[in-house]
Image (cartoon, rainbow, N blue to C red):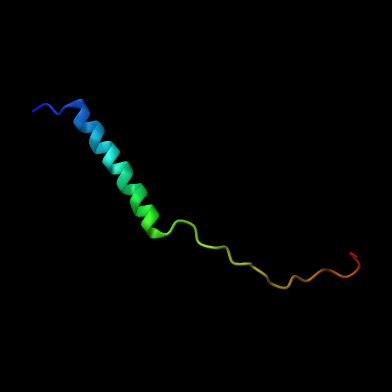
Length: 46
């Protein structure tokens, strides 16, 4: 049972397309939230 080379190529293409579609449906990037917290500055540095 020899698998044709073009068949293997199509399976690879379908896997890549499936991964891309899943990533697109998942939403891609999420907006960044600002991270803020107080930082203590040692005295005498300003």
